Amino acid sequence: MDPIEATHARVRARFVGSRLNLRTFETSKALAVHPLTIRAGERGLAVLFRFGAAALVDVTPIEEAVFYESLAPFVSEPEERPETEEIQIEVRAEGPEHVDESGRLALRALDLERLRVVAHVLAKSAVVSSYEQRATAMFDRVEALADELRRGRRVRGGRQLAREIGDLLLAQARTVGRVEVAEKPELIWDDPALDRLYEHLAAEFELRERDRALARKIEVASNTVETYLNLLLSRQNIRVEWYIVVLIVVEIALTLYTLWGR
Image 1: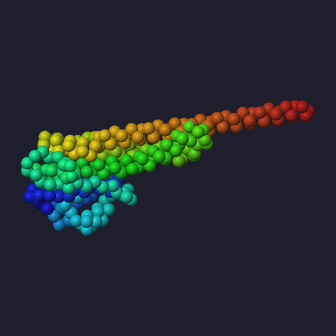
Image 2: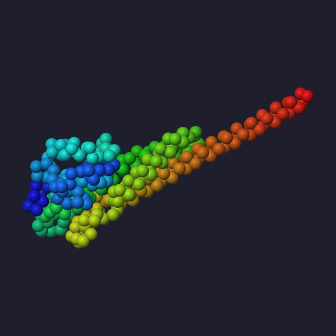
């Protein structure tokens, strides 16, 4: 596909794993960097992101499968069920660049920079979708913990709770530190047209709103688990104190028994 002369294209992004190790990736034929953009399939493109996502432009399903198979050695902690985002693009010389009622994205041209902006938004959305799924499942478990806390039931082991906190903090670190969902990509900084396109797509996919909601959900869940863990530690401390009291009483009783016996 010639990014300049094409009249339509499909962009499909996939969250493949926690990280793409692009330092060892062959970049001698790269069309662009930051993000790395290369040829894929017979006439398509691939835009690769270090935060573990890839976006393919105008490739067939077979070419897509072959490409991701070749990409597998460079993926850290691959996703078992990768989240995807997809959009169809049409070139419309007249009118604004926007997503119409049918869900198609109208662009004035399919140049390389515009396609990379679209790939960037879709890649971020796929990553956020994956963490939204995890946060929802995690929040369901934490909600059960909160219900146990409300009912005064016996708590579970601290090791499992510590893992819950670790999962939550790791998800937060990855979404904020690696993906930078709320941040604009470097490639649009000096181009107002690309900036407007990015802002429109970011609003269309609700990136900032979803990022804030995800952060809030992680914060609430983390606070709940920490409270639960503190309660567990408090009960363990109380139990230890009772053990000490019992030992002291037993020692006093033995001493008195010895004295009376004499």
